[in-house]
Length: 104
Ligand code: SF4
Ligand code: F3S
Image 1 (tube, rainbow, N blue to C red):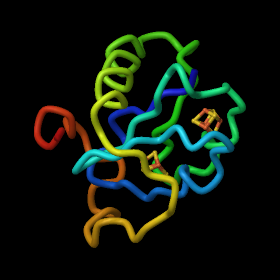
Image 2 (image 1 turned 90 degrees about the vertical axis):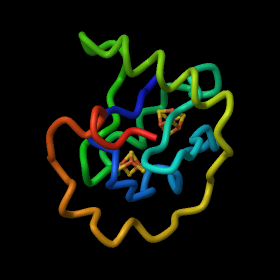
Image 3 (image 1 turned 180 degrees about the vertical axis):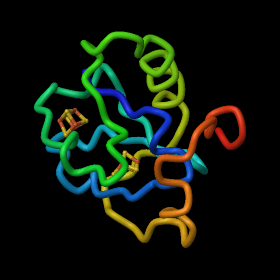
Image 4 (image 1 turned 45 degrees about the vertical axis):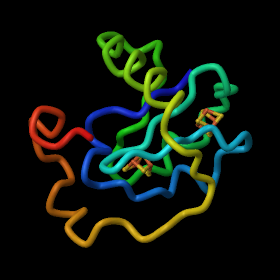
């Protein structure tokens, strides 16, 4: 599966949801997650994210993010249409410690 990681927080560009063939993105206030049981590993979303937030879970060190994606995909609503990003999205692109400060 692919997972959405910290770089999405406060950026939420939603380019990813437009290309996903199985509509497996779910939306929280500050980031999206991928449902690991629904993702078919096609990889098309990864290069679409301007914040470089989407990674294959085969990359090392993503256990925390895989668990977070699984946990919140079960409770957040599905999103399949792109929408405008937050007005301050660019300000937060590449920012550090976004999880500790802003995750919701
Ligand atoms: Fe959707 Fe494919 Fe990305 Fe999985 S890898 S979330 S199926 S676009
Ligand atoms: Fe987030 Fe990138 Fe999608 S910032 S909403 S994973 S396009």
